[in-house]
Amino acid sequence: MSVPLLKIGAVLSTMAMVTNWMSQTLPSLVGLNGTTVSRGGTSERIAIYPSPEEGWQIYSSAQDADGKCICTVVAPAQNMCNRDPRSRQLRQLMEKVQNITQSMELLDLRTNRDLQYVRNTESLMKAVDVKLKTASDNPRSLNPKSLQELKDKVTQLLPLLPVLEQYKTDARQISRVREEVRNLSLVLMAIQEEMGAYDYEELRHRVLLLETRLHSCMQKLGCGKLTGVSNPITIRASGSRFGSWMTDTMIPSSDNRVWSMDGYFKGRRVLEYRTLNDFMKGQNFVQHLLPHPWAGTGHVVYNGSLYYNKYQSNIIIKYHFRSRSVLVQRSLSGAGYNNTFPYSWGGSSDIDLMADENGLWAVYTTIPNAGNIVISRLEPQSLEVLQTWDTGFPKRSAGESFMICSTLYVTNSHLAGAKIYFAYYTNSSSYEYTDIPFHNQYSHISMMDYNPRERVLYTWNNGHQVLYNVTLFQVIKTAGD
Image (cartoon, rainbow, N blue to C red; front, side, top):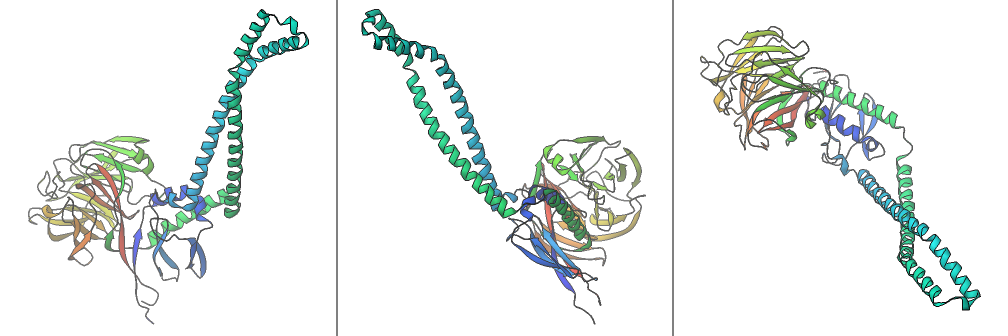
C-alpha cells in the first residue's frame, strides 16, 4: 500500500551557534516546560520555548523509511539565552552580591581608618581620665594652669565625636547588609530547590550527545528546494568593502576553522582562524601566502583545499592548506576572465567556485554562450569538467549566485532590495523565476555562498561578514513509495 509523501519545511541553524548557545545555557536544558517527541517507538522529552527568539523551536517532523522521527530544530541567536527568566534572576542576584561586596569593602575601609584614629587618641583619653580623677578627689589641686591643660586635651578629643557618629551609621549599614545576605540566601535556596542537585558533568555530556544527534539529523534531512532565507546574522565587521570568508564544506564537524580573504584581485594572503569565535575576535590565526594571486571573490574551501581563480586568467588552482602547496591547476576552457563576464558588481567575479551536497561547481560564462551563466560540475581531484549546463540567464544581470542541492539560485542585484530571482535545476535541466526576499543589510554584497555542512549562506556585505539560515522544502518518502 502506498503511503502519501510527507512534505515539510526545514529551517536549519549553524552548529557553531548551537554549540555556543548550549555551552552557555546548561541549566536551562532541565526543569523547563517541554513537549514529547516520538523517536523510534520511544518518547523523549525535550525543552521547547514559545518562540525562536526565546529558545529552541520545532518547525516540522516526519518519519523516515525506518519509522524513526526526523525533526527540524531552530537554535536561538547567541544573545537570546539571557531572556530565560532564570538567567535574569541569577543576573540580579549577581548584582546584589556585587553591591553587598562593595558595601562590605567600604565598611572595612572606614572601620580600619576610624579604629586607627581611636587607637591614636587612646593615650590622650587616659591622661584626661587621670586628671579628672585627681580633680574629683582634690578640687583644690586644679589650679588655672591645670584647668587649661585639661581643656586643651578635651578639645583634642572633640574630633572623636564624628567618628563615633560614623560608627553608629555603619552599625545600621551592617544591619541592612545582614538582612540582604539573609534574603539572598533564601533566594539561592529556592533556586537550588527548583533546579535540584544536578550533576553538571552529566549535563554537559548530555548536551554534547544532543549536539551530535542534531548534527546527524541535519545530515539525514537530505536535499530540498529553497523557499526562504532568514534575517541576517552579522558575525564581524572587518576588511575592505569586497572579500570572502568561509568554512570547509565537507570536513568533520569537529573542525571549525574559518578562512578569510580580503579584496577581490591580486590578493595572496589567506587568514586561517581556529574557530568561529576566534574569527569574531580577530585572534588565533595563521597566515597562508598563496603562490599565485587570486581574482574575484568566488573561492571555496573543499575537503582541506582552497579552490580559486588565478588572477588575469581562467585557470583554477587547488591549494592544499596542510602541505601549503598547489596540488593541481587547470584552465576552464573558454571561460571569460578579467571582468569579461562578471556579476553586476564587477570585481573580476567572472569565475565563481562553489560546493553543495553533491560536489564542486564552477559558475561562469563564455563568448559562445553570449554571456549567459554556465554551470559546470568539476572533479575535485583533477578539476576536469564532468558536465555543463547553459542556464540562459545573463550573468551581468546577476548580483550573486550559489548552489544548493544541485540547483543554482541567482539574485537579481547586489544592492539593497535584492531578492533570489532565478533558479536553475541541473537534475532536470529546467529553470523557473522565483521571488525569495532577503534583507541586504549593508547594501553591497560581493560574495554569497552556501555551506552544505552547516546549511547556511555566507556573505561578505560591504565589509561585514554575515550569515543567513535557509528554509528548505523537504520531500521525504516513507516505506511503500
